[in-house]
Image (cartoon, rainbow, N blue to C red; front, side):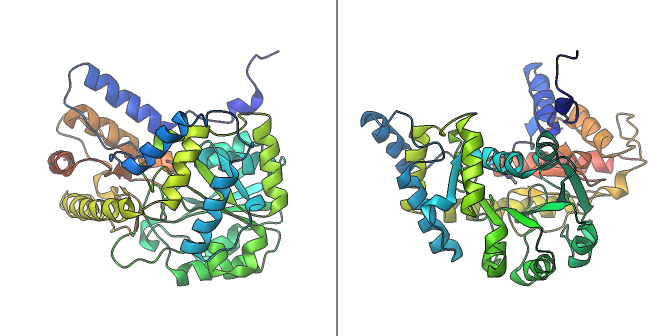
Length: 400
Ligand SMILES: Cc1ncc(COP(=O)(O)O)c(C=O)c1O
């Protein structure tokens, strides 16, 4: 009898973590490495949020809470949805988990049966397909090439839907491309979904607040109220308030689904960290200045990175609407040989040679399901970004 489960063999280890590990090893060996792999803001958590956590500890708020969240936090989340998204939810429609990751995972485990399909636009966040596999479902990746600004078209969505489709996962602005859907683009997708009442919508709005220029964020249940009863709207404090380590994510949706998610959480982790929940109450109810400040910094960095990458031969970098990633296409580099003698057969070979020859760590596109490309996280200092992009330019100029 094998010791490890069959389910586990369907899942691959996280490629983004592999890149970070490799970069860490090179750094430990004394190499000058710039990591552009990490998916977290480089800013500190705002002070009012830290103080709220300290106050919670001092007040003895250190015990278990209700499995899927404190009533105070659920109320703050309802307020947030009303204030920022025009969506009305009651506290019994809210689920709070240990990061957005847990709420997404709970939702999939609670609903997927063998053979159920989940539509995932590619490139995608690395965890979606593997979470679907762990939950026993079948991920259906739909390619969204750069020519379509890395966005799903209504035609491609329509073609991917089958009688077995249970969920459509939507993520705008996107990790890894930063692509954000305008209201009209999203409405075109929700029109398709209205014709297929068996398909549920799982929208991952984690990067809601990181949008640039005059881009207006919108979410499916807001654009098409007809989808409200079959939409799970997921969000969290990790990216919006530089709180990745606090591990608080949340979701809003139909009561039956929220109850099923709580059942899973009750038999796995129980409540997310109580102190972090109190910090999240302050994040959502307190001053919102941090959001504007981080948005301005990220917009400046996006502009810098896009301009410098487009100056690298063989690289085409679209201008994304949000998040803190860019996803340049490197079709023009494939088939060449680097100055260090590496054959650039695909985007993984590109990223490996780039790291070994220049010390810049990026994640190759195959990890996100669309090649040839790579992902840059620009959640790092302007100086480090300038240095890294100059090295990428030099590397690409050296390709023969
Ligand atoms: C698109 C997307 N969704 C969800 C998450 C999960 O965030 P967390 O579990 O920190 O709330 C991430 C984190 O990288 C992400 O990029």
